[in-house]
Length: 263
Length: 340
Ligand SMILES: Cc1cc2nc3c(=O)[nH]c(=O)nc-3n(C[C@H](O)[C@H](O)[C@H](O)COP(=O)(O)OP(=O)(O)OC[C@H]3O[C@@H](n4cnc5c(N)ncnc54)[C@H](O)[C@@H]3O)c2cc1C
Ligand code: SF4
Ligand code: SF4
Ligand code: FES
Image 1 (cartoon, rainbow over the protein chains, first blue to last red):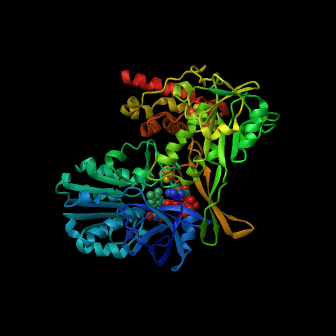
Image 2 (image 1 turned 135 degrees about the horizontal axis):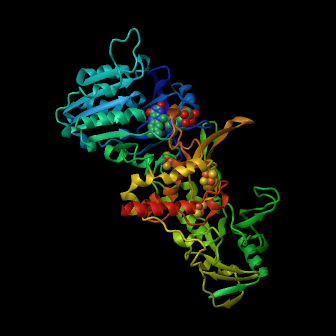
Image 3 (image 1 turned 90 degrees about the horizontal axis):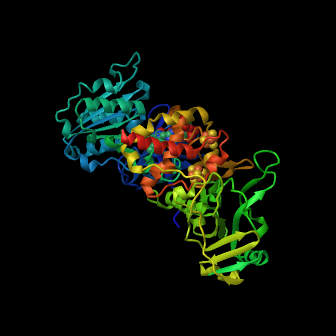
């Protein structure tokens, strides 16, 4: 009988600090996930935590992990050459096949950039797959900015709007919540535009509303949910929102579905 | 055809079977009840007729036989994951039809929900033989007829315990060798009417009025009355949620284990996520979540009501909250909401 809770060992090949508390761990792995899928990542005797795959190639995967508690603290202690234990990938990712030849807008808040970063890099490699890409990213403050180098690279090909909630003395860029910039965004044909929104619950809620105001049809909006998850395979019940198991049917949902997830 | 047994031949059968099976049944634990000088009726291993408690409903259900309260998934030594071995023996469970049906409800979650079968559940579940106890009267809080779980025909052996006169129907030939006695006419009987009848809501009507049901004021009462102790979910034979937990041994921190332990959607912490955020903070919202799972969304998913009408949640609630009443209120609200 296959043990569905049995993780496999994955070597950490490099660790890239993004901020004081967010590190990107590159693991040797041949997992080819859907964009937006996640893993259960563990350290024996410490515990497991669900983590999005923030990027991948056929040789490695990347996880960007914020240090917030028992498991993530312990992961941050690890060094290249150490091992993490992983099982997955789990859940449903973004249906990128349906996004082909469309205008795509990606709005991400904070760590919400992790689950969509691999999509952006996919388009960065194959810009012809879509009509154009608009990226909106927001962070709390300049020191919370993730993936700075990559954001720079994306700017060469795409429209990127980076904003922070609160700047500091040296900050010369945009300030304010992402929602502030949506009314002025150039959206040529709303029916032909796909919008991806990922971030903290309140950010997602109000960002989606702003896009709806701009005439984007509900069915063109995609979000990704975070819920407590113990099993990620539809058994433990923690992630359930009334009739929906986020680990199975999500974490990526179409807005027509997500707006019905009452809690 | 049935076989008539006396206590001696029944005990003899248990003795024979115990070579190949662990045998579980409701038992009375003297002085272990929640108040001093009360007993606890629960599931335990038995070896003779006198061990079986038939006069009272068990407070806890037989689910722990196949789904232990705490179950080790892995033992860790340094960086290795090792799966615990299990007993070679099979499992015989004496249970009433409602509880036998509750195993089928657990099957839906552990074996059918999502893309994988839960191997830890399956390896115990595959061993189970159903020794069903005839139950024609029930107890004061039972409503198994209303939930359609009063019958269980897929038994291995069926028993009628009439004081010390025992009659059984051996459906699974595997067990014929253990039971010998006079052959008699015997038709298993099932309860056809409980003292309590509950009308379950029409799930299509709920689907059509989901927001109305969710936001209904009926739930508010439970925000005030429920204390989120989780006893109702612990005693429920169909509640199956768990949390993962890693530990290391104090005397040898290099070794440890990963376990799963029962969790309850009624208790604080069930939905906590990073940033101190949690959902369903009001107890009334948790009640809605639990009740809807039992009578609505599980049925939508698997085509059968999750609740088996055992009434244990009503028996154990320290605040005298009645699930039965809540279900009736939901049905009422749905029917009224519809006709508006
Ligand atoms: C689908 C999914 C994808 C995720 N992707 C990422 C990611 O890419 N990067 C990242 O840093 N984090 C991600 N998270 C969040 C991450 O799982 C939690 O931060 C982590 O589980 C906390 O574990 P801990 O042991 O370090 O913290 P704990 O000591 O357990 O707790 C610290 C805090 O985290 C909360 N928490 C505990 N378990 C979870 C959980 N399963 N989900 C959310 N919060 C929890 C606790 O309630 C507490 O507030 C994701 C979560 C989900 C569900
Ligand atoms: S919800 Fe209550 S009546 Fe229904 S199966 Fe669970 S404990 Fe029994
Ligand atoms: S047993 Fe009663 S008080 Fe305790 S959680 Fe259940 S309904 Fe609430
Ligand atoms: S995480 Fe366990 S059921 Fe979804």
